[in-house]
Image (cartoon, rainbow, N blue to C red; front, side, top):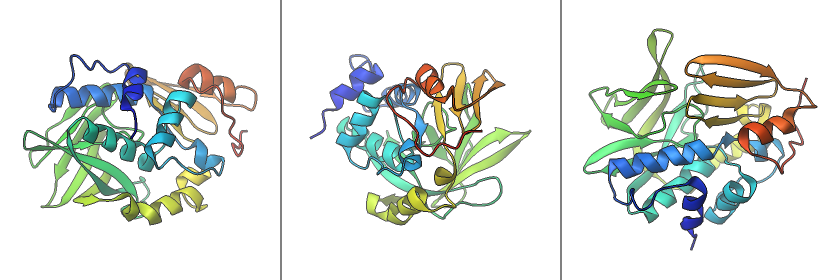
Length: 261
């Protein structure tokens, strides 16, 4: 059985103050998790297996100061929340890429029920608020340092997660409110690990929430978002390892297939 107390120590979770199955505790767990654990696809870039069990994911987080992408992070966080007594389902979603839709149902998110209210929780997506999003028909808006978000039922089962961008609400993904098992994501896991058309195979992505915004590393740039203002720094063969260490605390990993210009 996984010792989640190691995770709580690493994430600096205040277990004395936040120890109930309520929204306050849930939001504390989410905030601490996304503030410490980056969204990243280093294993995919290195053609290594992703972490699909709790012990391997715990090792990545605590020993390597790393994270993962949706199948790793949300599956792991779901088990942590269940251990804390929450009612949690894994659900499938389809990402809006901006140019169309990604592979159907290939994204994993979480639905958490607190006091008869459903919430969308996602610690495995690179741009989400640091708290749970209430699921309703009323388009309740969550305000975060990185923008405005909402998660709305557009019919009895379909959820739209949206972010306010360019003077309008833009769909980030559509999810289906039906419980899933990890085996239901087998096709998506295979695609996103190995298919050359997968965005995770094509390029490196490392992104972590901060108190002032977000920091994101790609193959060519480090983007620092500070209260809405973005600053980009070039990434080169000479500085990318230092960037991983200085900005993400990742100091013991090389990216074998990282194509740098």
